[in-house]
Length: 246
Image (cartoon, helix red, strand yellow):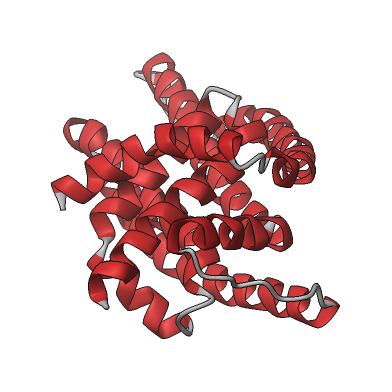
């Protein structure tokens, strides 16, 4: 698992080089625009409501003693909550809306790596199928992720556990982000259930891929180059594992 995790992280360097070599940045232009617009909306919305959530939490505290400390805790907690939820919403929505662009990008990379032609003429029906599959995968994963994140948040209310639960929440989100990036390739080989099994066997790689993807988002540049870089990095890892399984 550790080897896969490291591979998931380092594959981004190879992905950047491969995109440039194959002149695939054209696939990144529209996803980048959609990502920036939607990501900006999420950030603005999260910033706007975080103070309101903090104020609402504080309003339930009836005493003056410890009020200032609780205010600080509530502010941090509400900021963390809105940040996590905002990232979760962004992640799943963007994986769906950029799928018509990331699927052909993944296909071009797989063709290069395997030497096999996967060319299919563009069809509106196929694009719709890709979106529907993306929705199915996202709905399935978001339910599981919310379950784990909610449980970790509850444990995170215990101060001594907060640093650990925050790290675990990030790793959970990274796993499911990596899952979505890998699925652009897996959709050509497996159904949804089989794809889920494949990612579970490659969970280290999925987490590593998602860690960098979410990390790029946190520093802002990920809204521009995150989806195509993560897709190509994930495609390289998936193709390697599919080849070794043959």
